[in-house]
Amino acid sequence: MSNIRAGMTKDQVITVLGRPDGFAQSGATGALTYSNRLMSGFSWDRADYHVMLSSGVVTAYGPGTIRQNSAPGNIRTPVLIPIR
Image (cartoon, rainbow, N blue to C red; front, side, top):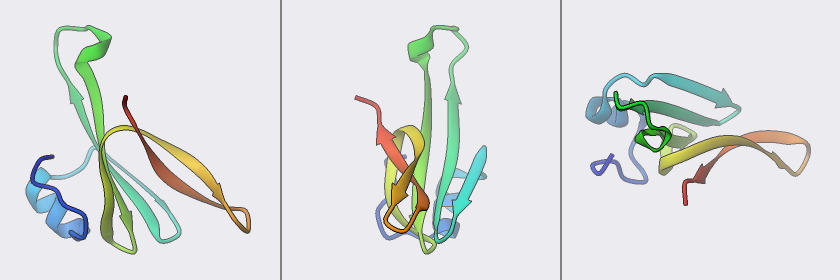
């Protein structure tokens, strides 16, 4: 994840991180999901990493959860809620 930067394309992200475990798309906004599950079984050992894309370009990335945000005009777009 440390090699990801805002402005990268989806193809560049996949070249660096590999094929994602999940993908969601809503209009021009998308999210690539990469799951990181350690074998110890403790809940704090699990972190999902997301790469948010707008029109095919990285706008946000990191650990957290994806939520639907209601934008003006009732357009629902995915947003990244970081882990604190």
